[in-house]
Length: 583
Image 1 (cartoon, one colour):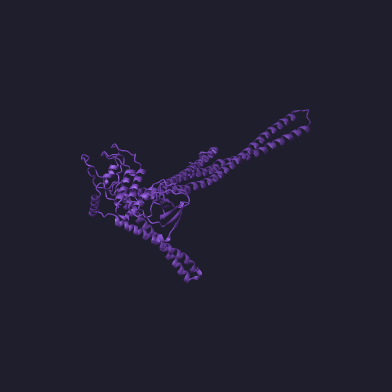
Image 2 (spheres, one colour):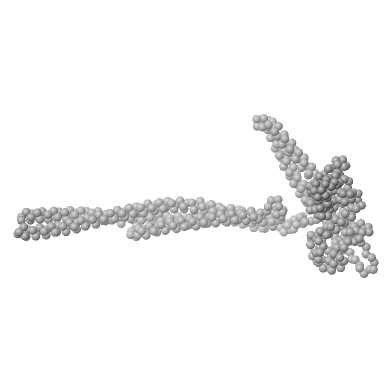
């Protein structure tokens, strides 16, 4: 099977077919190129997707990733990054092994095809020239033969005419001989050119064209083989990343299997456990007895039971509890009452409780986390101590490094001046001392909290029993506070009114205490309207007494005659009495 033998007369069709083959190859190159662009785009979208759902640093989301389910999700996001990387590998390999190589091959193929068809056209032009020469000699031979015949006929006519002179007859005879000689020469030339043309034609159809067409056939077969190899490479590039993609999927499955629901449940306990003991049973109140009820010892408005009127929340109780209680209202209110009740008669905790209520009203978070339940406060303090210890260790490592560098400078003065490091060494030492003092402060608060937390087991139950015996009606009052006037669920009591009553009751608890001594004076720089509970209004230019400094929350406690409250520190200019402050 040879194109030179079978397709000897299909030069133009072969030229079209080979051009079509190059077009097919370029089309395949374009297909692979678009596939690589799709892979890159897909990888980019996967990476953006994984980045979008990554937890933000120093945010609440980062804390949520303590749970095993969230850790598994984070592992899935990381594996998706690796998964996207494999698609980038596919794109790179297809570009380098297929697109680039085929593009170079197409250029070479075009040059080769151009040279073959140039040779074919050259041979075609040569045979056409030979054919034209043959036709020209043939026509000349034909013309000379006709001229010789006419000259012979003219000579015979002149020779037969008796009226013609002998000289004219001789002239006609010589003319006929010349024409016959020219015809013979044309015949010989035509015969020579014909033989040459037949030889050239035989070479053209049996040697030149078959050789050229054979090379074109081999070129076309190489193109077909090359596109087949490229298709195999296309599949192999995908096949090479399948094991790594499989590993990514296996890691996702492994992360999913590592989810531990029990561990997550324990983490929820550690995150939200308050440390308080649950309330005891609610006592039965018999309304059938015609006797005057006494005010409960743990009533919000009469904690000490000394002739103060009872405060009602939501009207008269009808014994029907609310079926659903919102945490931000009733439950938080009962928690504040519980905190106040536990601090009554305990001077050590009294001011902390008042600070806690004020922090609720003013929105300030105290440095010792006293606004949190005991267990959560312990966790926060422990976390803060650990962070400070890490910072101390970091500063100590830096100090050691500077010390070693100073020793090197002392041994080799040409490397640097040892005195230049003294300032940095002093600064690091001061930072270490500050961090140690800060750590000691938080460790003291932590030790205090750990000493207050109730022990687990029988001791905790005994303390709970003693507490219930001393305050038998605490939970009862909380339950009554959750009732609506008609015994149904209502939300008419707002959180603002609850905090207001809470603060009022707290103020009553401290009525008998001695007022805090003044530690200095202050001058109001601006007018401040104290509309919230615990604040006090001041007028620009007014002078007042300072009884408590700003503790870092932006508020200063002042006194005007018998009235006390908080004002923003930026609104006043404080003049502290050093002697009073030290005492």
